[in-house]
Image (cartoon, rainbow, N blue to C red; front, side, top):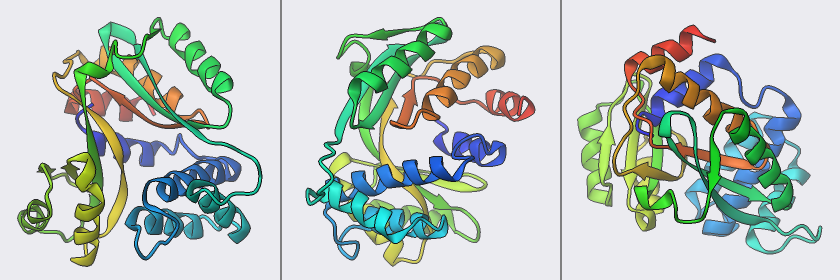
Length: 252
């Protein structure tokens, strides 16, 4: 969905995700594992891992938990847990297309939880490839907007290989080719910009435009999916308009 930063801002205000400390640790642990798997276990050479470690420390996550999560991602874990990355595809309310990125040690558990939510929302899971062809895989970076000249940030990001920069009031979105996200993030960090989040995302090739209340029904499903422990990120074909964002905030 476009408007990633709008949804991030709404989630911050609603406080709907990661409300309990146990859930915070679960999600951050998976972030650490994913970052270490993709870029190695050395935070000095892995910007995403360094960001995840900073989040873990801010949440007072125990050091042992952090080290186990990083070791698992880097292939050095000794707890016997094997984490698997899976992307599920489905159709939500009003013909919306959704991709759900999962990191799990039990795909049957993950699939059951996701299927239940789709069924309750009147949607359905789809076969592999049925939805993903409608999206491009991109790197996505959120930068804190306070005190930032977006034009200057654009120049730094573009020089590093970014595809697009979208200014916002609280967050600035930076989209990159998948293989350039690490280098773009490193350049932005070196230039002094505060990275709020970064991950791979699915960007819809054609966005679905809906009326506000119909859009809210799609986002209600997205929110419930994101609350599942095994779910990392959810991408939707929905165009996040100001009207949908306002309706979501009003409903909180």
